[in-house]
Image 1 (cartoon, rainbow, N blue to C red):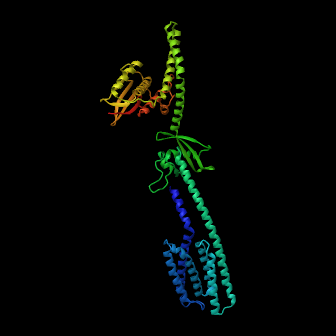
Image 2: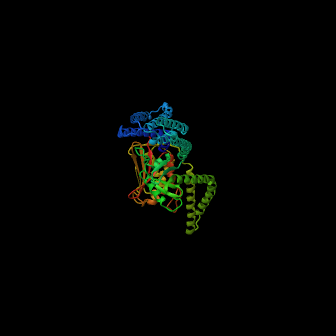
Image 3: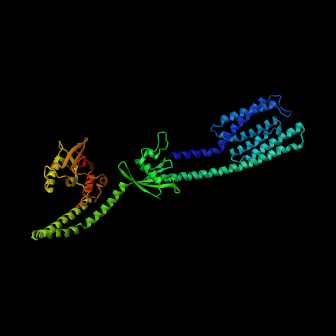
Length: 534
């Protein structure tokens, strides 16, 4: 925005640069010149003038010229169309004043006629060269008339016309050069204006493109000043402008990105993709230099949310896997059921200890395959929630009783603490049962399997928040593995499929709740955050 305002300001200045600045120069030059004439007249006095010089006339003309110059200097800033038409009259008055003052100073011998060249040059710039030859003609006529008067008055030889003729030719030559120069300036201004419009349109197109991009874009210069950014990058920048409108440095707004850019700027690799962490988000950075010959002139930084990219890839993979499994689940389960039935019949026979052990291995793997199929099929049902209102304490008691019976866990090894009041929630009971079952089974497998090794605490959070905390006394999750904890198919167990925690989190989000992990001093805690409907 600041760059656009600056370009507009420069464009408006360039439209008036040739005439306005030239008029300002003429007014200042005219005033200084007239004051010099007045001071010169006062300094020389009445006795130091020659026979062909008129001191009183010189002083009077200089004083009148000073008053005229001062008036024009005051009137010039006024915005009026009449002043534009009065500009040629000012130039003519300047020429007449200079010729008259030159006459009072003794004619061509005074050398003041050279001031006409300066006046004609500046006048040519004011009129864009159109009236340059006209001003030269006025000056020529004045010079010849003044010289004719001098020759007639003082009976000078005809050869005295040589000086005014040469000066007149110089005026015409200067006028022609001024006309050519003004024409060249007008063409340059027109070209610059056209290029300015093209650059402005290009800047608007670039801004529109970057604004519509899903990736965050930041443009910085060699001094790490943020020159441009799109709205997607605002979440990573603490500030982009100061209170007085000045540009903020990248290291003051996003120190992590600034450090990554500094490392890239001094690296030797052709291109580098970095992954950093900001606000608990993994970001993928890609740097493109503004000048491909050197990285020291700034760069364009493209920022992608790496966690979203990974999540999208995982969702795509799981969706494909879910569709595949749903299509072949029936074909898999039919032969799997036949194998399981045949294995049960064989187990009824007495084949000896070694054969019974092999049959048990077959049964265990059949159950494992069936569990994998159920878990993968559950991924396609995360959005099929059947939410209903129920009392939470009674639900937890039923879950506790069923879980301890099925998993064969002693009651004193798994302890629960219920809510003090009867609280109701709106949730899919089947989903909540599976979430608590997965968390509790996972906690029991990693616990020490002692008295109180597994706990389920029910606590309130704020006015309507409820927390269900499943706590175990195990070793916890290593720090380097915590960011992979809820990834599908990631497991540290030899018999696990890595879908339990992932499915639990997906089911929690499908019911507008949240599942998070917390490392404790002794053990781990998985907290399910939900809302009461009391």
